[in-house]
Image 1: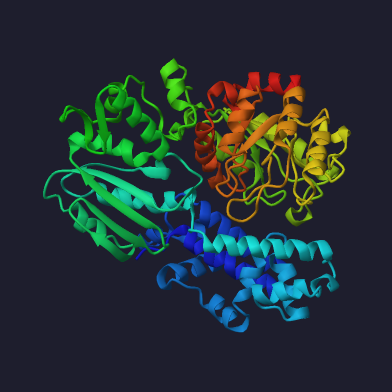
Image 2: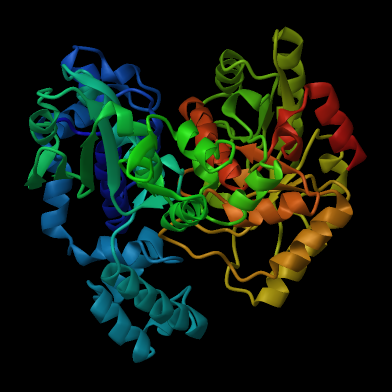
Length: 576
C-alpha cells in the first residue's frame, strides 16, 4: 500500500513538533520542518521513486539522513525515532501544540512547568487562572485558550473535511488506475472537487464504461482501500487509508453528460436548472433530459445546458449565486485560466524561511514560462523566519540587479513581505522601501485585535505610499485558524481609493482571499494578484489552487494584476 507524500510530511512535522517540545536543537527541528514542507509540495510520489530505485537524497531539503528517514516511513509506515519519542512524551501534547497561538514552545512550558498533558487539563488550568502565572502568558491568553478549546471541540464533533490539495494527491493516481481498466470510456471526479471547493467531505467519481468492464471490481481492489462500504453494479463506496470516502457511480455513455452535471452539483444549482426545464416541459435527472418520456439529450453537459436555452456554465460557478441569471443575459465571465498567469508576485528564498536560493527560484519560474517573479522575503519583525533588516535587504537588491543582468527570458522583481505593525506602520523605513519594485504587506501577529482596531491598523498601512499588495488579507488558515475580525467593506473601500491590490494566496492551507471576497473586490474595481507565497521551487505549482479560487470568485484576466505583461505591470505598480 503506497504511502503518500503528505503522509510522510505529516510524520516529519509531528516529529519536529515533539522534538521542539522536548527542547531539541533548533537546527534539527528546522531541518525536519523544512523537509516536511518540501516533501508535501514535491510533484512526484516518493513511494514511486523509491520503488524505481531512485535516490531520495536528491530531493531538495533532504540529504542522505532525512532521505533514509523518508524511506523508513515509506517501507514501514512509521518512523522509529518518532515512536520512541511518543513513548516518552504524553500523546496529548501534539493536540495542545496545534491550538492557535500556542505551538511547541508554549506547549513545552505548559508541560514542564504545570504538568499539563491534555486539552482537558489545559482547560482546567486556564479556568483556575494557573496559565497566566507562566512567563509569556496572561489573562487574555487564558481566555483565548478556552475559546480555542471550545472551537476545537465543535470542529471535532462536526464532519471531517479534507483540504483540496490532499484530495488532489489522492484522486490523481486513483483516476489513472481506473482509466487503465479495459472497457472504461471516461472517468472524472465530480462533486465539490470539480467545483474546486476549498475542502471536501467526500469524493464522487463518475465512470462511463462498456458492459462487462469489471470497473467496480477493480475499484474496490484499489491498493489504498481499507474498507469496502458497498459494492454494486452501478455504485460502490470505499474508504481510503486517509479516511476519505469515495463513491464511484457507473453510467452508460449516452447518459454521461447528464450524470456529470447532476453529480457535480451544487444541489441548489441543479434544482434551479431542473425548474427551468420543467417550465419547458423537460424532465432533467442523472440519466438524461426527457420530453414526454423520450430521452432527448444527456450525452454531454453542453447538451444539458443547451436544451434549457443556456450556454455552458463552468463547474466553479455552479453555486446558484447568480450564474444562471448571468447565463440568461449572456454575461457569464470568461474565467481566468492557469495559462493566463504571466508571473508570480510573492515568493521566498533561503535569505529568510525559504528553501531555495534566489537563483533556483528564478530558474524554476523561468522554466514555467513566466515573464517575472517577485522575491518577497520576510522583513525583520518576523524573527522566527529570520526576517531581513535594511542592510540585508539592500544587499539582496544588489544580488537581484546582478542576477537580472545574466538572466534571459525572465525578470526578477525586487520586493519584500513587510509586516504591518500593530500601530499600522510598516516594518521598514521609506528610504529602503522606495528602492523596491513592489511591497507586499501582511499581518503576522496580534491577530486578536477588535475588528475596529484591526481594520484601522491595515488601512493605516494601506495609506503608506509604498504599499502595493495586501497578502493573505484575512489571515485565516483553513481548519486551523479563523480569519481575524475585520470590517471588509471598509478595508476594501480603502484599497479601492488607494489603488491597493488584494492577494489570493495560493497556499492550499490559506486560499485567502475567499471566493466571495474576491468577487466583491473585483466588482468594486480592485485588482487581485494570484500568488503562491512559494517557499521552495515546487510550491510555484500551487498557482493552480489560487486560479481555482479565482475562478470560483468569477475573476477574469482583467481582474488579475499578474496576467499583465511586465511593462504593463510596472506601469500599474508605479501609478499606484
